[in-house]
Length: 134
Image (tube, rainbow, N blue to C red; front, side, top):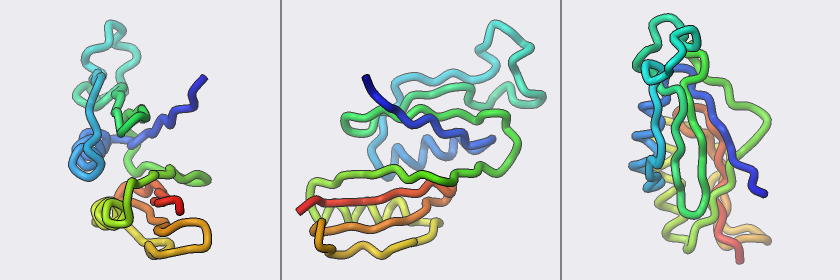
């Protein structure tokens, strides 16, 4: 059994996919646009070229993403994605890259439970926790 996040970017999914490819090295393993649907009734008006569904492989994990109903601004609240880095240097690189255009919630630093830990919301509003367990 696995739990996999499914994030709805409400019209900014292609931008998010490119951002995660560049920052996390995400690999796109599936990508379907609304225009690929055999049922035209499932296509939100004007959204033919938007992402209906995509899978992104990040390390050993899969993140599913979509433009959802393409209503504009995505809303990500009540959760964070936790990203385990292999070293403090890697944590710093990831934290800096994910934070571009985003907002730092807790600066990356040493804690009693990790050699590096920090929290931020990326430019799409997705909350991330970056950790290097001690």
